[in-house]
Image (cartoon, rainbow, N blue to C red):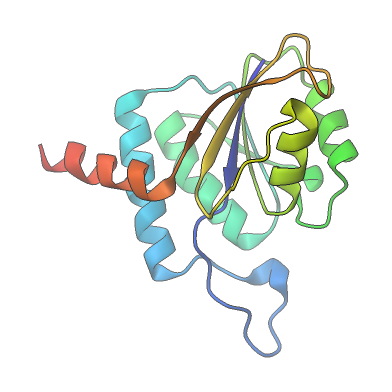
Length: 163
């Protein structure tokens, strides 16, 4: 199983009276996620399943990725910011028959889960994609395959679109 963990793109700050759940991507974040998706369309990574936290900013990020990856977004409560990493492990183990999973979520959950899965401490900035691989999926036995920064992928997407 190969898992692409994606932290949602840059978001607006919380406004008075607004719940964190409803916080959207910033206009800059929307542009970066669009450019990131353009890069992914050209790179054509495999995607059998795209899971997302139901929070607005995560769903916006996932919607951009879904168009590039050619799949549908499935909300997953185990990717919410306050979720227990064990719940995310259970969600992944329940899908271990899926070869290529993409999962859009939040910090600190994604960082904690990456550490539990691989033993690696990774800085996961907004929009970063962390790629893990394991077969079968078991905590502590995954391999960290790569870490891809949003700015790098967005710049690649802009360059590919311009050529």
